[in-house]
Image (cartoon, rainbow, N blue to C red; front, side, top):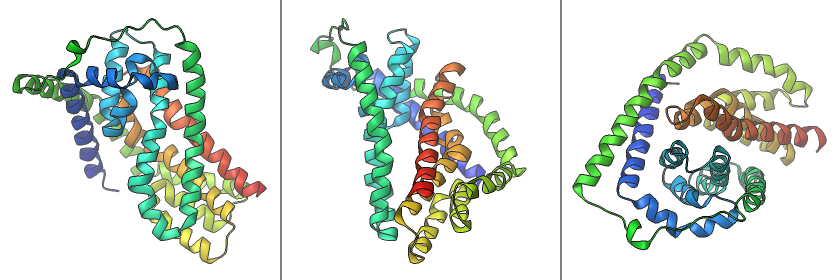
Length: 306
């Protein structure tokens, strides 16, 4: 893993998200989009946050910047924010599966990739259903008055674009200052063998759950590099592993990747610099912790029972 390259990819991607979000806010595009997406409130989303799932499809970082601004201004409560972010996961998952996941895996492992995609979608559908139920009760009599059309017309000119860009750059610099020490700490732990030690320690436990040596190799490889691990799925198919066991192995491999890498390399950069520590921890538990528990539980169930 090239950590220098990873660092600059993260920082540049987050910086782009900050700048995009600031420009969207300054041009009043966010307000205009919020008015156009008010019908999404029926899915249990706070009326002021109905634009978040849409912006999430363009840039998750920008969506977090927009939501955090409302949170800081006291226009929404934390529970409103959590519900909106959780509701954004399903459209984001669909886009990810369509653009990146299925085009890579279907040619490699065939219909198993489709089964696994459906397995991943179950969690997001259940989550959206729960969010919708909670939100509908919470916002049943919410006193919300939409802004007048004249106040939400997008404003696009050089001055606005300049102000938005400068604000985004300022926020990006603040993020970089906070993120760099944490990134260096994680890199130090990895280089000292923390990840390898953890995967070795988990090996015996995975064996006790019914995973054989090939499956454990897939899981530990996926924890570091999922694309490299995908080739092992082809081997399992050639060895006539039951489809349920392959799906279970893939689910646990995904959980291991989330546990050892994705939360700090992909999720934490969204949150650091935007939210207080308590909010950041809660977001990590919701966006990383719950999927990890789901993938581990489903994976072990598929291997042990089926």
